[in-house]
Image (cartoon, rainbow, N blue to C red):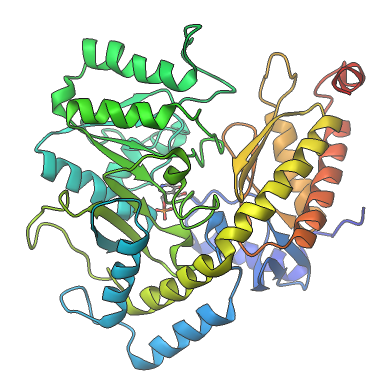
Length: 453
Ligand SMILES: Cc1ncc(COP(=O)(O)O)c(C=O)c1O
């Protein structure tokens, strides 16, 4: 397969300038320097074309620069750009009404607009404490909830998010996430990984450590994102909801990555038939304009005037972009995510059959993870293979992003066509074949291949 010579000269010189003036803390992977994009296609500053299976970390939900989103931004910019959250404007109200209609609550929904995922999570933390009058929060290992001080305390996907930043916020306890492929807690014969985690919270955390009646909320990603695109067992959420109800604990669904139609439903928690009390969103909500929201059941959003706010909340351009985004998702892209997502999962299962380095393929809609292992029996993570696949895919014109220890995430715009999916997967398979040759991950590879057939 043809490879690109990357980075090109223009990209190289821009990266040098970037290095001099931009914080070195950003986790840049490979040297992609964007020039422009349309739909699922993007071009770098040297004129190289790529398919974007990363969508700016699951953000460009309607594709790059969708004409309707661009038009909404332009029209609003002509009228006014900012007025502050001290006042009112129609697009903000219209957006909150839209969110009320699609929120996964039977009860009415009330929204607090933010500028990012982490800010939505901060709002959820504060509201949960305010509303319940309790201090403690429970989050999951592998979780990613953001990088501001409260949210980063809930985050537990890599130690570097905490290194050098202690002391973090008090009152947070982490428990294992129910990963059916790598269960941390041994489950009894009559239960699965999800039920085992619920039992652990009751029998170990509540019975021995944290009084349940001091817990304000349990915050959870319905499908864990940064932690490895992990789908919990079906039993988990109904049991988690029941546990919260037993103890008067709020359930916060962090939908920043998995929400807004990505899994084929508006909210990924709907895949599990459970209602949260608070939901956090951002990323795909406005196709890349900075916008997030904390959406709560009306009876939970009890904080009074002045208790929480922000300068840019409900920014009119972001709200306009979001309204255009939500209409596009509702009228086709959400259904497309389910349809093309199933196709991608099927094709990846075929690819897996020929590639022993793939331990598992999992996901819903267009939120799909491919986890690489050194050995399918020991499941030792093949970090080198994943990193190399990401790099080789880039050289072949495909943008992807890693997550977890050795998972590659596939999170393209929701407008991905089957033909684009096929083109991207061909590149991905070639990258996997080359990576498997280059990293001798598994000496008995041939035997496994034969055994798998
Ligand atoms: C589930 C989840 N929550 C919160 C965040 C934080 O969002 P942001 O980077 O916009 O602050 C992310 C970002 O990746 C996320 O995936």
